[in-house]
Image (tube, rainbow, N blue to C red; front, side, top):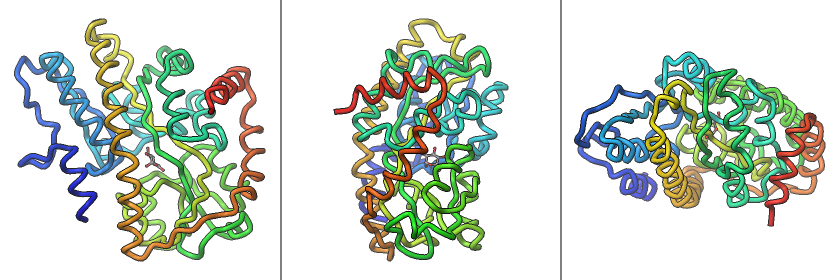
Amino acid sequence: GGAMAALLCSMAACGADGGSTGASSGGTSGKELKLSINQTEQHPNYIALAHLADRMRERTDGRINIKVYPNAVLGAQTESMQSLEQGVIDLASLSAPQLVNLNTDFQVLDLPLVFDSVEHQMNCLNDPDLVGDLYMSLADSHNMVITGAYTQGARSVYNSKQPIVTPDDMKGLKIRVQETDTQVKMIEAMGATASPLSFGEVYGALQTGVIDGAENNQVSYITMKHYEVAKYYSYTNHLIGADLTIVNADVYNSWSDEDKEVWQEEFAASVDEFNELWDATVADAEEQTKAAGSQYNEVDADAFRAVLQPVTEAALTTETQKALYQAFRERAE
Ligand code: GCU
């Protein structure tokens, strides 16, 4: 629809081809670097990355020539993570819980009650003093360098059956979660049964009733059309998630120091662009899904906090996890 399409289109500089990933700038084009993302072209994450790719091409005279492939056409996140390690693709945007399967320290980025707001989260997750070591921790073991984070905003539960107000209302519901163990434990602690599925499988599973609901932000709720098959969106706000932009380490190490610096500068600019888009996109998603019949409701926040606190405590086991958590909490207001 109207407002969001117009906003997204103006921000994406929609051209005749409707996209912005063409190799438009001058200079010799370097080999095409493939970036995998599971979002549609309307999602701020895609838009910010596509513009980042354009600016990189311009600023490096085409030496760094990234093409962003949306809609998981290069694979769902779990497969993309493998392709990235093997160098079949060159970059990927992955949800933090995926990385937990490679190094459990990443868990701290994806737990309830870690970040108080998007501002707090962004203030932590793009600061090399706090996350520099973590972001380099997969370089030798898995051939990946994490270069920064965009927010997923607060994630909430939505389902096809009824409004959720207390954890009791979750009983008997089967809720899709991202494919990692802590996510399963979190949804179970919240009262429901968890079903790990890839993002692209959620719509069909909701439609056929294999699952009753999922948990995500309002933007994915609309871009993936989940609102069509799950009309009750309850603000559990159980965690603030992050998407990480990751580069294959061989590719990253092949860049000159100057080009690496350009990448870091432009990535920081892309975070600003993303943040400017995010709030408006969330508000617009709510407006449009409400118009289409979705019902939003507040929950008993204390009751959810009571079941979520133990999930976070139980998940912080290693010294690194505890130290990271501590460092993040010290940055809270
Ligand atoms: C959000 C997030 C994606 C993630 C998805 C999911 O949309 O931005 O990276 O894959 O949630 O729940 O799988």
